[in-house]
Image (tube, rainbow, N blue to C red):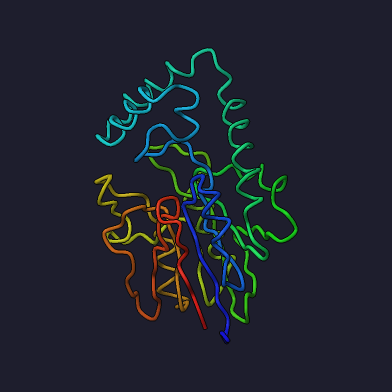
Length: 257
């Protein structure tokens, strides 16, 4: 019989409700580091909100532009496609449909924070009693203190939940010392921020890196970068771990003590 305590950690779920329904099997708790929404699947351009609204051909084109870092052209294409459509209403309706399915798949207990593509104002409507949502807050899980900071920093992608660096740093500061520091984005370390498939640096947080060096948590857990150059590294006393792209793997990262 298993002893101790076991937590499964997922990030970048991006619509994988089937895998999410199994993610808590064998664990005492599930931790989710955000990005539940699937706006556009870069591997299968037929999946997500964008192709549902505008078709696969337009999805192919916008992925091509973004991958080439031709962001202005991608935004111009987006403006043409959205012309005459209530963008906010269309996206919210599609996100609500995904959230209803995804939140229903969460096991009890789940501790979750927001990713940069999530819509935080909708979460209270879908989070059941067994799901605790935390952002700039801490909680004890199995005798260890977990701190959570959600969202992302401003980027050329202009995703829904991006906040300024000062606000993000204040949320980290509010956590104080924790055993496990949980965030959606990584600390600002090149090897942890570079996506080897997209061939670009994603935005990491200098404030996270400073907090890791100063407060020395046992672990710093994050996602956001789907195919990082380095999945884990040690910074001082802290093991920094990208918990993986759950949308494609369907496999949680395991923390036991």
